[in-house]
Length: 369
Image (cartoon, rainbow, N blue to C red; front, top):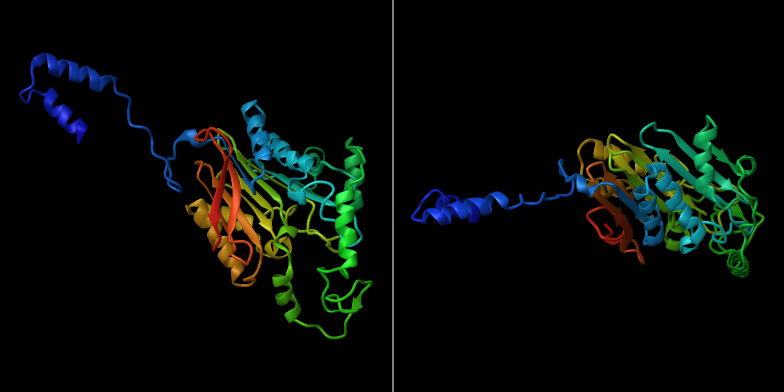
């Protein structure tokens, strides 16, 4: 309205000639209105890129990834270093060494990294004695024609790539393990075995009869903090997408267990023509639904990232209403979102975002559905 009135005055609606000239000059010098960024709508300002999004309030990981990008590093470099920061910091005790001991007291690591340009994936699972799991996953891309290496063989591969062999057990992880033993190994991940796994430790043998209700009841007993993971999405200024994950898995897991984190399409997924997604939570349940792949496919149809995340969570809810989990999503316009499943003790999900539109890493919060 102001511009319209000004134009009318400049055209001679009773205003002196000098005033009209000054007004025309003023209008000429005024900057254009800034672009408006609307989540999920095509044409978001390029200033929204590059973009770093990661699960949980792991701020230092976000800062590290951002620094690598701004220093000229690639999207894969940023993901590797960002997730690697969490491995060093032992984020929440659920990433890196010294956390989540398995039922024999050993800490093992899972990690994955994916290039959204080439669709190459490098992943390791049940990695022993090596602290930098995401770094080993990157080497799988760089130096093999494989996608996933597991167990002792993955550790030997890491050693051949120059990674030092180190003990992943700490006083903290040992304390967690001993406390669990003193609580009759509760909780654990066995079912339909003898002796009764809900009351005692093993060794176990299979029971003659199967109880289908055990799986449903076990969902309600699992501690939500047993499943945290760092999942990270990095989208560069040119729209190149990379994603990655790192975790020490579910605490007190059965030896050899592999969760969703190192599985492409489950723990994370990237496609530089669309965007990326990453998941965190109960990997044993979430991996059955390939939530990260599904979220990217929803975004491929034009679905807003936040809605894509919600649709993924809703899909899992139909089969596992009590599951603990969350998903982050971002597209190549710079829009992002997240969603989580509402269960007792978990009603909100915190995640980190960094982009040129922000002066610093921003902790975002979304209400679970």
